[in-house]
Amino acid sequence: MEFLEDLFYNRVFMAAVTGWLVAQVLKTVIHMWFNRKFVAERLIGSGGMPSSHSATVCALVTAAGFEYGGGSFQFAMAAIFAIIVMYDAMGVRRETGIQAKVLNEMMEMFIHMGKEMSVEDKLKEFVGHTPLQVLMGALLGVGIAVLMYL
Image 1 (tube, rainbow, N blue to C red):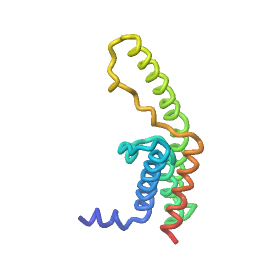
Image 2 (image 1 turned 135 degrees about the horizontal axis):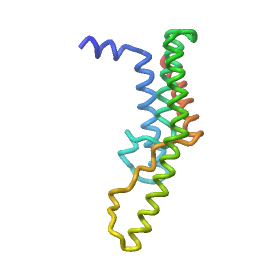
Image 3 (image 1 turned 90 degrees about the horizontal axis):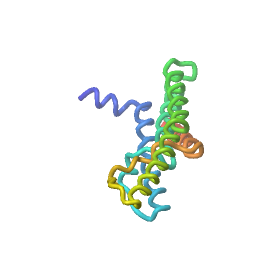
């Protein structure tokens, strides 16, 4: 029980979790606004605006900077981790989403041609982020950590 209490009072951890939570809620609200329907998967899913990955790691790195200083090992590790996560979100994961969209369109064509394929086999298209989504997530994460430390 002491472990959970320590975790709850760990401001660096809580900043990162709060960054993720706020980004996921915002992502769900934005998706609902533009598509006029609630999609529960957006609450935990990847992809979309803002990037919850970026919000999480930027809140983490900002909180580590406040807590341990810019010259600390903790800050350095968090910063490198953030760079890798955001680069991956805009690179490999974004390309994966684009490829999934193309493959899903091909599956739809095959289904219309009479081929036996299941619509349930659709690939997930929301996996990566545009640079704007990553930037907005990063700004959100930094802002949340700053607010938590003020």
